[in-house]
Amino acid sequence: MTNVAIFAASDLEYNLVKAILSDWKAINYQNQLLGGQGFCGNTLVELFCTKMGPKNATQQAKIALDNTKAKIVIITGLAGGLSQECQQGDLVIYKNCYFLPSDNASLDSPINCDQKLTSLIINTLQSNSLTIHQGDGITLPWVVCKADQKKSLAKNYKTIAVDMESYQILSAAKEKALPATVLRVISDDASGDLPNVNLAMNEMAEVNNLKMLVELAKHPILAARFLLNLKKSISVLKDCLPKILNQSFQEVLE
Image (cartoon, rainbow, N blue to C red):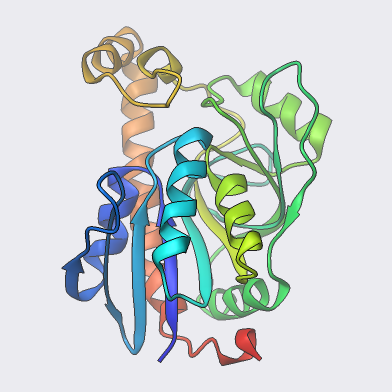
């Protein structure tokens, strides 16, 4: 039996993974770390919710990996598409991940994903006729809401997808010498704008629900598309994660 740690950021992503697990048991790892464990086939999955943003991911990933017995780390959830080829609902798996702390900062050194684990996931999913893109991802402390900003990130940094937590979790896994990779699904592609959800979040990426409702109400068409795409993207992950977790992972650990 393989023990796999899965990291998700939002409650939506966390509850998605939780729903595919059997014999679920919540565990109080630390007061501010939401987590638990269950089974997917013969794989024991320890699931952690870091909350959104790089600051939360840095804190929570360290606590989680100090308390887990997992030998493998998978970071999953939603991502924004930067490359034109990455369409809503497509899967992306990272080769390397970069971190850009602010608009005027330079990129932190990239962290690579484990090649054996990445290959196992790609080989598993390719047999299921899913659209998968492999390339470099980038972690930012804000949501990229404008299409022109997405295109600029793709051009300047040669990245295909963006998220808010992967770099920090990969860093924590690397410190523990654990094989880790990032598998995400594109919730918004490079061609479309989003409502400016950053206006509803504080510096810890905590969401003010009232401010979020106000921002969504300002842009009803963008908001409707945004929410519909979230639902579609989550269903893609719900279908593919059990296929991955039913693997033995032995070749990764050899």
